[in-house]
Length: 472
Ligand SMILES: *[C@@H]1O[C@H](CO)[C@@H](O)[C@H](O)[C@H]1NC(C)=O
Ligand SMILES: *[C@@H]1O[C@H](CO)[C@@H](O)[C@H](O)[C@H]1NC(C)=O
Ligand SMILES: *[C@@H]1O[C@H](CO)[C@@H](O)[C@H](O)[C@H]1NC(C)=O
Ligand SMILES: *[C@@H]1O[C@H](CO)[C@@H](O)[C@H](O)[C@H]1NC(C)=O
Image: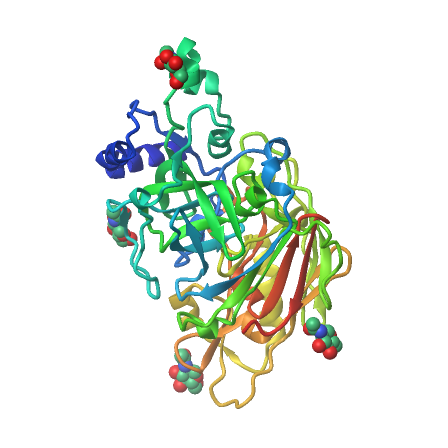
């Protein structure tokens, strides 16, 4: 309920309605006073991510079952591979550049495996509130008028239902139900998406996606007219029908996350899109764990978008930390379990999980004094003051997954210097707000923990793989 009212007030405050009318006029399509449809955010752990305002996720969309029905058949048959640079930014996310339209216009987008819709800033009148981020490029808007291949998605187009969960054309596309239905010009209702923080809204279009060695016509993308708190557009890589991997019929994709030391330097890691259905082989030196089944919970379609993995054990030093099973596997409410999310910067652990992990570090680290002043300043903990010591000795952190895959993290992936080179803090976050935030995954593996890892989402074989490597 709280969610709905937040949505409504957002809408009445910020919807620059004239922009929509302007766009429709520019495209010579009559406006039929479309009713905005709200896509609610049914999972709100992210609100507690303190300064991680760039957390990008939670597009509530269709179920996985539906995804299988509506996969675009003409695209899924063609094999291709494409490699794209992946840039780290100080606002926490990794971005890619993609080209859309005829002639192509290049747009920078945040790569997000935690959502499944792709949208970009659109038209000259694009408005973005609270969108200045350190390291964010100047926002470039896609110009619909300069493209000959743009089409507005009609109300009866099945792609319209990809963005609007529980969409019923019978009731939502009234004008198309009459005798003249074949000529119906009613457009797909505008979308409004709320993220953990921030939002975006606009209208659905199809455009030509111009990949380095392949042109993909009729790619569904959001032409956003307004946003709040978005450093760039978003490319959703989640498990829904509208996501980039689904629309391209990818068999797998992988990315290599460059160390955060290279934030905003222009150095990049890379993202590989692989459409070859013969790519069933394991990649050299990769460890794999099966992608876990997503919990199916009525009213929580956002859970269908995530990549769940079977995290079984967390070890600190030689010690296996005791985590109750209910946090490791999702229950019938969709609470619990672990997801991998490129749009999250720091790994999130629900408070009962975090407390045992942090507690074990505190227990084992005897050499350094706690820096409680820094803990209260940053919200990170534990923090240790290394003053007077010339070496760093901290316990190893290891994640063990179903099937035996182990991720032994390099120290730089879970401890960071905070303001100088004296104090180190554990760089993972938790919610200490209480029981209200217990739904959704218990553990969200963020990109910071996967710096200098090459990670692979093998959709064909339903498995998640990784290996440590330099990503330059
Ligand atoms: C921008 O952010 C500031 C501080 O977080 C907030 O007070 C203000 O209401 C925001 N403005 C908009 C338009 O979202
Ligand atoms: C629908 O379009 C067809 C072909 O363009 C045209 O012949 C027909 O008159 C149109 N019908 C209506 C009701 O506009
Ligand atoms: C795989 O691991 C072996 C042994 O550590 C190493 O020599 C080799 O270079 C690795 N191959 C790749 C592609 O990383
Ligand atoms: C770290 O410890 C040293 C020595 O006790 C102290 O002088 C310094 O202020 C501490 N640093 C921080 C950031 O608390």
